[in-house]
Length: 205
Image (cartoon, rainbow, N blue to C red; front, side):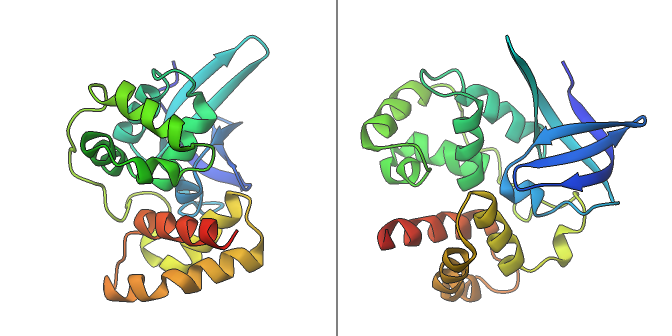
C-alpha cells in the first residue's frame, strides 16, 4: 500500500493532482478542498489510499491520516464506494461526519450529492459504531501548499467548480454564504461554508 506521496505539484485538474515522486508523476484523486490548497511547483505531502480494481489502480489523496482513515471506514458501509466516500469528505470534515453519525443527523448526509433520505438513514445505522468519537477537527487544513494565504472565497469557488457546478452557480453560492463567513471572522471554516453553499444550491434547483 502507498501510505503517502510527497513532492512538488506538477499539475492540477478539477479532481486530480499530479505529484512528482522520484521523477514519476503520480495522479492522485483529491477532494476540491484539498485541491484548492495545492499550488503547482510547490511541495505537498498527501496521505493516500490505493483502490485496486480489476481494470484500474486509483490513488486517492487526503490532507492527513485521519481523513484517509475515515475514507476507508466509509467504504465498509454497503453501497459506498471510493467516489461516494470522497464526495462525503468533500462536503464534511472527518469530525463533522463523526458528529453527524453520532447524532443521527440525516440532513447532514443528504447534503452530499448522491445520498438521498433512505440512503442517509441506512448509512447512519451502518456507520454508527465504526467512525468513533470526534478527535478534534483540523480547522484550516494547514500544512499543504499555501492554504493560509488563499481567501475563503477562492477556496469555496474552486471546490464548487470541482464538484461540477457552473461558474455562475458557484458565484451565487459564494454570495449566499458570505454573511455566514463574515460572521465567523477572519478565518471561516471552508468545509462548513461548502456544506452551506451546497444546501443553497439544492434549494434553488
